[in-house]
Length: 341
Image (cartoon, rainbow, N blue to C red; front, side, top):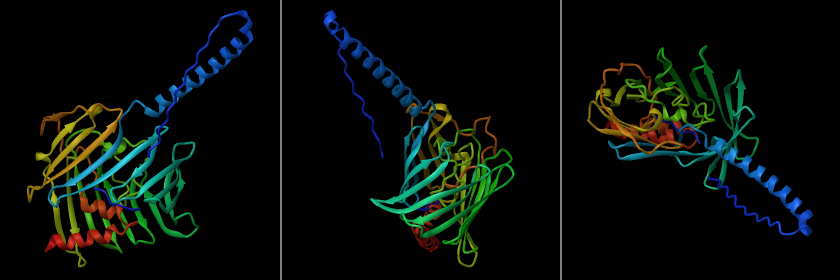
């Protein structure tokens, strides 16, 4: 699941040109109008090409809805696009990120808004085409509110990230095929929560259908959503102040039900906790995709245990991982305490 940190432009083009050739007396004006018409047609043709390029030909994620029926709460992230890239990202914790890119279509600057208030300006620092540091400035000032560092392995996979000011860190492991196997969240150097994934289907990862977003900088578990497939099950383990662990849920991959849409992207995945039989769902909406879906049979012969390493998607974890910039970790801690009582 996701852990939290801290639109829409419409273009309307309407043209109407009437060219009347009536007599030779208007030849000069006609030639002028003909020239203007050609220029206008060229402009409209270019606009059409730009619009087509903006719409793209592949599915693009517009909504991600994580619902925990066990405790009856939802986390919803919405995305909008400009020039084919994510332009605005409205997170489930209420912060809107407006993203700017460089000429290589890589993160340049992101601005975080709480309503109309600019809370943070984020600068991205690269090494070898990978973001190795984010600097979060307060509002539009030079005051640093946080620095987040990222470490990668030789395969280019994110294996570690840490927040200097908020004192959290996350480690990641991967399956041989590259899918995310686990993430482990620490606070103040102490274990806080862990997520583990399995993959039995080759369904595409919807979070990869966010052009421009190479990793989820708005979530503390930023590597969640960076691998190719969506998970078949997720196990969430929580830790108290003494390091004692308890399982929040452990989904049974044999009971996962899929609703699959266009180009093998899931529209909905319904998970069942093996312990409580509680339901958790992940729902997705796209643009450039058919809204029609089909149910996928469970445990088909071509399913392979461990085929996919899934991303964490526990509601609680989402809050934790996404919350460092908005105090969500503290709320998650309180939730954890209530769950253990």
